[in-house]
Length: 298
Image (tube, rainbow, N blue to C red):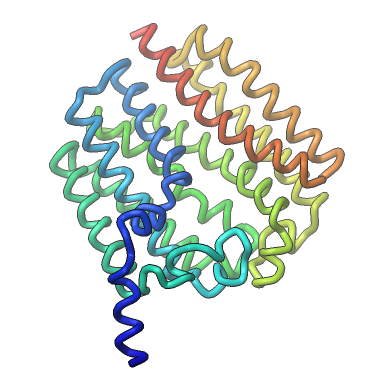
């Protein structure tokens, strides 16, 4: 009877359960940077076929990584308020079914990006997926406070995928987009870690606020915010972006530094929440401004 019950649970899962299993809210910003990178590379509309391939394939690739992550982390997710309702924890979707779903998403993403864009886009997408699952989730997350710095590089792959889908090659500008997200990631996720540090402490995840405290975390956030700003303006010095992006980046960067400084002065939860929310807006608007600027000048 127990065996029959355990098998029937996944069969009761709805498409909504599988949809939320992919973490669509998390994917949205990653996918947006990939799409904007396409517009930046093309200097405008990249074409419907490429747009659809990167949109669908990119979503499926990121979704696969997220599902693998939730399967691996289901033990600690069950003990954290923020993640206790995930389908892999409640067993609305069984572990085996989730793994099959993740593999199918991965294979589908590879084929769609390969056939709809090119092999380089497909391989870069798989590299980002592998980095997130193998380097971050399986190796670094539970061992090192620097987990989000090195492991978080996985989130910087989408612009490379979008760029190479259009051009077939990588120059230095897409690598600057990669670097922008790489240095932005600690600002964003350490702000989140400050917000839920007790959850991380309870399950033994060595996030920076747990290991070094709030003040040290705020200082590191400030350092990475400065590096993010510096990376964000480099395309201007090389003549790849122009006036529209310059005017857009000034208030965006000023607010990022302002919120980071305020958090350093008083590393309190409301200020961490403010920075966390603004950091998402910052990245989206920065990429959008780049796309508009390139469309105006190309």
